[in-house]
Image (tube, rainbow, N blue to C red; front, side):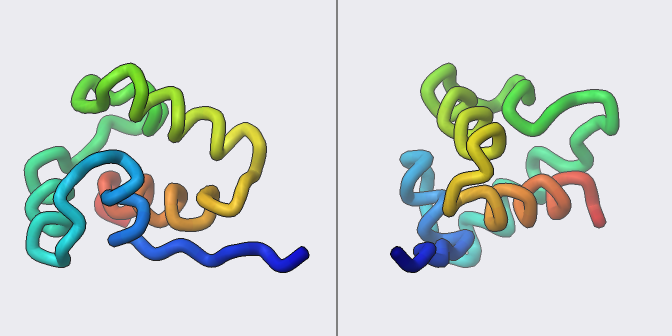
Length: 78
């Protein structure tokens, strides 16, 4: 079985957020920088369902993990 590749736009749509490039950039600008001692899924701006999704996908090293890592890096200004 092939692994499905997800985009940042797909991730934002999955999280129930606006998923166009301008909305994604705005979200990242609004919520950056994320403190180094805060796990992405523990950030205060996620709903409980969003946080659970992010946490589970990273823990399971699921198909979404790569794009979630990218979001994590962007929120930290890396």
